[in-house]
Length: 172
Image (cartoon, rainbow, N blue to C red):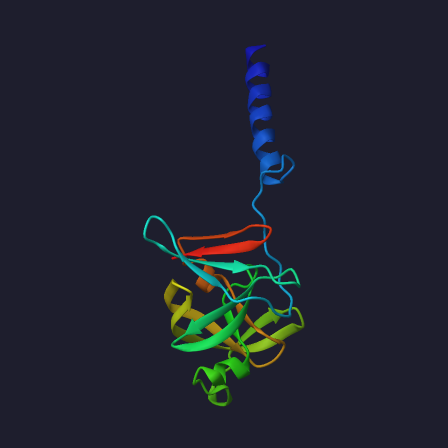
């Protein structure tokens, strides 16, 4: 009898955590989808504990757009938490002083438009406001990308990033 009570308690405990993981209790964090168009630039704030923060407002299209500085040059990114790395269009790569025509497209990545050849690159410093990350892995895509994507090779190296219904907070 005691064994059945213990098993029942464990099952109840596990179901509560499983429900939270599946958001059946409404406790999950919001996520961000990827698409296209434009919005307002990131507003830069300093947090109270001295870390650097940037807050990005949600665009009229429902997406988060970030005006970043990459190695001292401006690039507009669509924030994409589903992208493993930062992905650059050939045009943005050229604007950064890279030569996409001489790159080795040895990788194949999946985009919303299907498979695309990609060349690996390293970006020295990527910053949105004061939320700065150095030595960022990225790809230059030969096709299939209308706008550059700010992926997890930048976002995952921040101390925090959080999406709310109206904004995204980045903290380095």
